[in-house]
Image 1 (cartoon, rainbow, N blue to C red):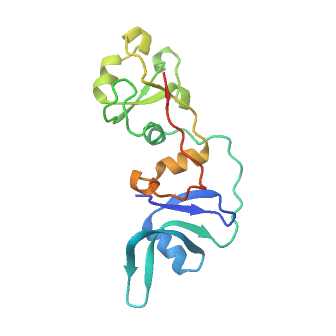
Image 2 (image 1 turned 45 degrees about the horizontal axis):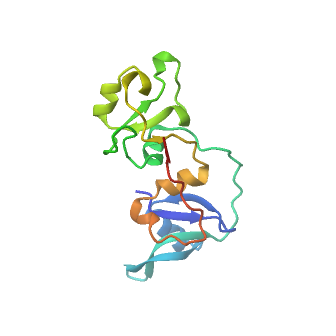
Image 3 (image 1 turned 90 degrees about the vertical axis):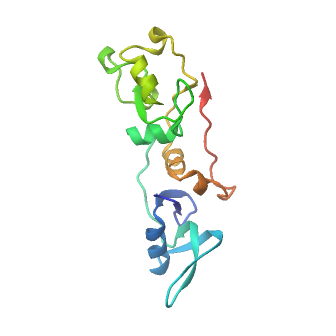
Length: 172
């Protein structure tokens, strides 16, 4: 699970990493803990370290500019917070708004999270043809949005207020 947010030396969000990777970066003096879990500590024979929630790299890492996050099935589920776009229950699959057989593709604006029941019921039709309106409209997340959404819900709670806020899905 990627529960630790990594900030660049300039305090901009860079990525998310596992707790083990975050601890290694801190112990190697490549990063410092900016925010720790309250009351949680990692102890070893020679160390006593707060459990990091947000770390900051000590050296600036140059990242090529990206306008949008790359599309993926996991990314769609995370963007929609594992909530079915048709009924609101827990989503486990990705549905194409315009089916691939009708020319729809694997894009952020053409895919939504869906429960398997609704995905099967909609089948090879558009939501209008199936009489299944979307509860919210799909959107293209920025790379920062995608990274922050990848944090677990517990990891997002209590992040510093100066970090960008996550977008809310737009109602249809």
